[in-house]
Image 1 (tube, rainbow, N blue to C red):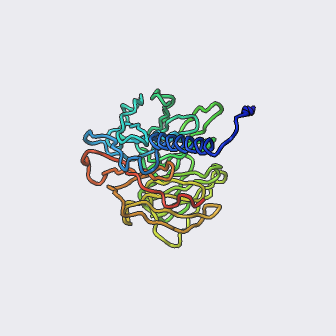
Image 2 (cartoon, rainbow, N blue to C red):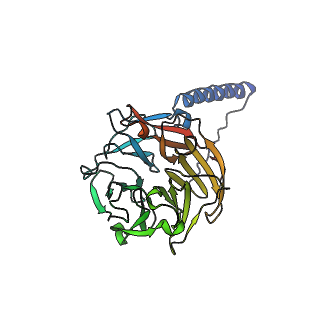
Image 3 (cartoon, rainbow, N blue to C red):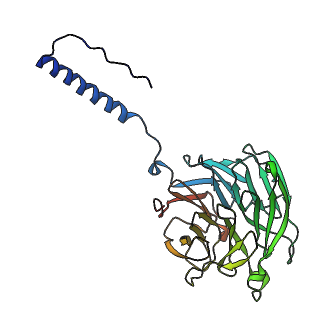
Length: 336
């Protein structure tokens, strides 16, 4: 930036002139501070809503949630198959005009990718929409070893979409090809090999997350009350060790080595946070957030220093409107 020299005058400086200029500067500064204090600054976490209304229509039963970097929130409906969209700064959400969902009775996992696309699963389909709701792709899952699929959640890496099947002990995979096109959804891993003696119909695969490099997946199983680590290169499966603690989450979120998990079965309902080792093979539960305003929480998303937890009401169908997402403070904020 070019500097502009101040013009020097030959006016003699007296005590009165100095005092007068000091008074003028003080008055100007006071006026400026008053004006600045009246200008609203950026929204802080305290100014954001503590609760978000997904819908006031009966039977919606929200289940999945995703939030983009700019604060756009997407929530899926297990009750109707619809998707909803809102902003973290506004307490009310609206239906997202996603085309092609008319035949899907439920939508569960929802995720966004770096291209701004909205990916969701439910029933036997994986769908991909652009931010305007235009259907870009629909991929049908084949039947599994126990019968028809019931897709639950998904994780997106640079080269693939991984999907869990609640009805079958199977993780499916769709390749992300050059240009971002999504390939067919195909069986990728039969997880029974990790625990052969466990009954196949009780695996009940739920949440799935991937590390940033896409080299490892964490897969939640309600039935085994455990999280399973899967290497994407060799499909090696091992149990995530958390000090012998029974840990069967529903939805999960992985941020670096911090695992956020929502538990609603076999433990007090709420958000549990664990710190994992570098290879995501073991860890320690550091926080148990069970006193929040939860109503059968199913999963969560993170934005800023807040966690957004879905209140599904799935244990009391069709539930009672309004259906909501609760925001709580992330206890690990600032740890990294």
